[in-house]
Length: 102
Image (cartoon, rainbow, N blue to C red; front, side, top):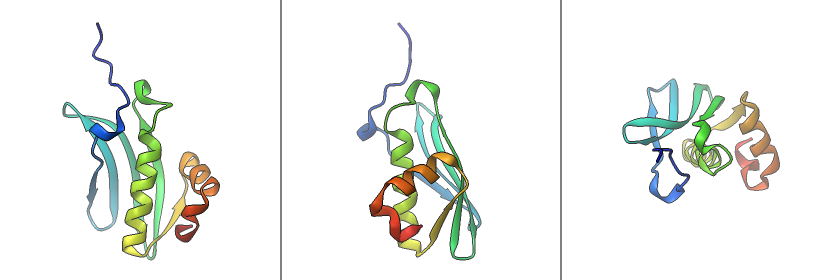
């Protein structure tokens, strides 16, 4: 039997660390980071530069949930998202509800 993580989105809270200039949204399991999205603040923008998900969780909802979290945060902070991460760029472009933060 393996201890492979399963994709159970409701069991995994998204945490957020921000030092005022750089930040990360992430999911941890058993003290181990299994997904993250990083950004840098520049003026009125959040430059989202990286998304990573544990290989055993890829194809699930973890990355999409991280994008939703950064969108909600950007709205609350009145920031625009500038995605340099290709995954985030595609999700923002394909999701009409995110037009207000592009």
